[in-house]
Length: 420
Image (cartoon, rainbow, N blue to C red; front, side, top):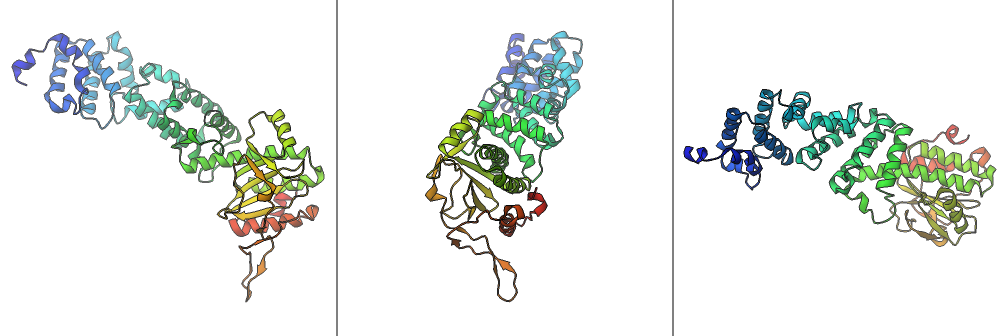
């Protein structure tokens, strides 16, 4: 454009000009490099707030730190705000720039995100202070959320249950969970910190577990659509948490129906395996009568399947223990185990499983001696029967089962852990 062309732009045109800066592809600021400089001269000359407010709105809406002109336009805004600190119409933006460096693309989103996570007043108060409460559909707010989820993932271990609860109330609002990318990112942030073996405080785990159960559901059942995009490692963490809840609820159900003296030894053993972090997944199969009782006690919260072909009182819990699938059958049922990649191994998560799919040849629980003093080993071949729960009070079957688990996982269970 020639100088005469710039002179022809009216004051009204300049007030509307920011709405054209990123309207096209490529953006107008890239096609006409002097445009932003001329706009700044107009602001310096007139001192009017209206075109500056328009630039603020357009900048926030179209924010992307990699978008041409965003950094330079942010600098123009910051410079103008420093010159209009007494203008009440700009007071929110003046304060946000001073407190958070809002219009610095490298600093603004990160500073606001950090405040969302840590400010004692809560996320909603931070949004009001930064002028973003009514601008949650902007590109800038998307960048803030991206930074907040990354920060949550790295700082979650230091947060109290109350703070986590308050953050989750914020994240579930404003249709946040309706957006697949944000939805997956939140689940990753809540679960991946625990993927390396660390465990949250029980109160924190309860808050996260209940939130995910309510808004994402059980990944073991259904089509998994609500877990789409979530990292497999994160889903594995939640499966372990569900396994803990499933196992304890199974114990509660069976304890009322089985011989208390016999069952307490099995409960103590599997609790020790669970506490050692070895149960990665679990799935309960209840008899029809037990299922009716369970639904009356727990409602629909306990996800489980139906055990077909067993006696009226018998139920089963299938567990993924390292590379093994193990089946504990209540009452007088034997313990069985298979390699998880064995096509004959029962699959977890099925709505119905028949006895004929579980009472099948199992891996042997008794080792054999290697030739030449090479120590003990276990066969990969299945044998006709599983392990009978004999000698519970002396820890007989428990020691045999613990040895098999140690062989396949490398984790030793001490008798003091399960002989309680």
